[in-house]
Image 1: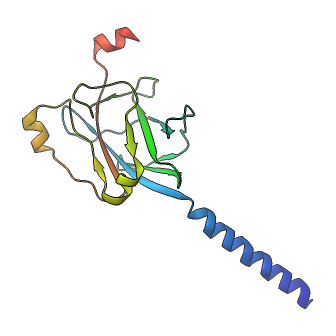
Image 2: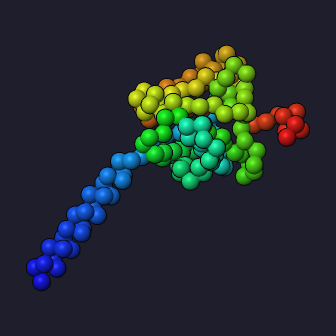
Image 3: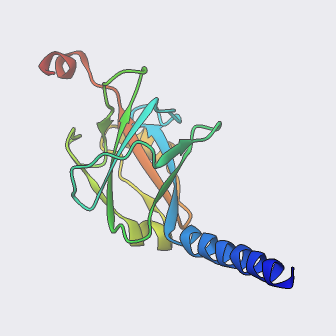
Length: 158
């Protein structure tokens, strides 16, 4: 009986140790998204995440929160992520306002920088006076993005 109890106890300890090690193999980034024109928070209806310039899309890495933010849980060895956000429960994705000229392509965000100091991307879609009004800061582990919906011309090109 003592051998069986010892074996069970050893199994439970090994299971707990493995669970703790596996739990440390991920990083969590808090994602906050704002409308690049109005500065108001937006709640995407879909997330497409790519890691380290690979083609595989990970929709299961994102867990939306009730407040409009989302938790992005990525493997610990990921160095860069690219995020596309859908709206209106459709395949349409927001235009990324991070660049001087808003872009549809991939913009890669450095995970070490996000984790150490947080990252607020520039808002290339808003007017200067609105950008100052809605200026925000990020805490370590936060990524703040500015986006806008496609206009009629951009939708027509699809």
